[in-house]
Amino acid sequence: MKALLITAFLLFVFFYSCSQNEKILIVATNISTLGCNTSGTFLMEIAYPFQYFIDNGFDVDIVTPKGGKTAIYENWMMPDDLKKIKQSELFIYICSPTGNLEVKPSQ
Image (cartoon, rainbow, N blue to C red; front, side, top):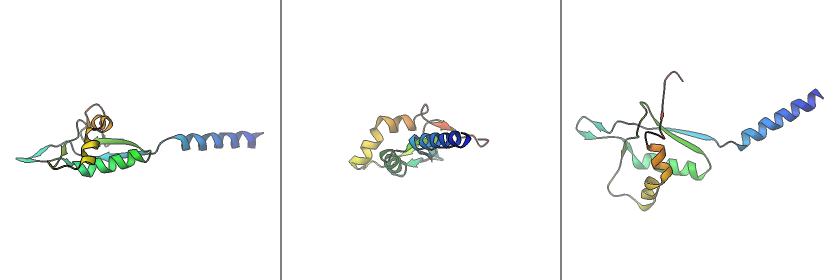
């Protein structure tokens, strides 16, 4: 009986963990200027990995060291697929102050 309960519990844990999406954490900057220069995370460095992970079933969070909006540096000449990612509701939300988590060194 004890072995049956342990087996049932292990099967439950296995199937529960298989049903959960894997999570990806992307760390970006929230510093938009450095001196007199525009700065930030280059859009394609964050958007293409973000979309790849989303398309492959991962849950993605984008965080900045101090929390708040992700500073994104973009080139004025942008391919259509990059524009589509940038304008997607999920990408906009994840990069916004409300969708962005604060990284705390103690955690």
